[in-house]
Image 1 (cartoon, rainbow, N blue to C red):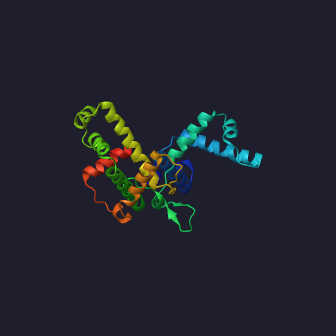
Image 2: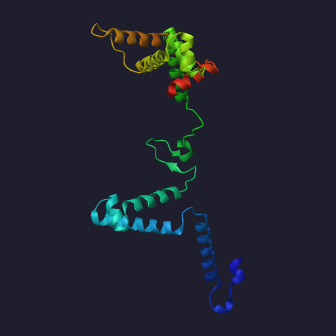
Image 3: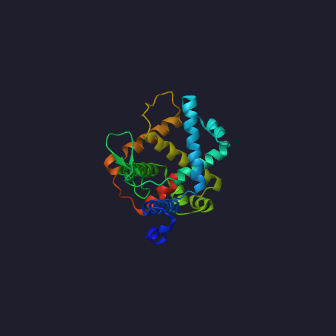
Length: 243
């Protein structure tokens, strides 16, 4: 319609040719307006692509980044910056097909991870880990258990715990360190191959091995993946895992 309004027959140009040029120009303007990348970046991208094709033809192989940067008179930093801007300017549709090393055809929406959704396997692993940690905590010596629960769940200070247990603050700190180390080693042992306890081990190593074994046998695997722990238990587990 715009071409029809602007057409001037006196110029001697056929309307079809005039309209085709106007329509083509309008399409190009619309595409450029919708493009995330400025024209300067697109121009540099074409220059980069031509240089890469020319080098590949001359060298008989794909050029490395240094050769390509030299061919377009850029530093490596400028080349990386341009490639990053080009990467961010690419727009893909969700139905865009991707190659993922499998026989079935997959689209982009099939392989994009939703961070708000936990995969079933990840959820089971999380439940198992939490269960191991709860069992490990339950099997700690009573005073160490009180220190861990008081410090991480009840927000008690070392001074308060020392007064409650009738020991010094340094002793509370020592018990907390020993308990956390026992928990760490006990949990790690659940994911490592079992090693037979021999007489060559020290008394401390045997005690740690017995503790790890008790964690593994305290509950059936079905109970571990059954999420029945309360809010306080989950809070404690999450805080301990963050240590």
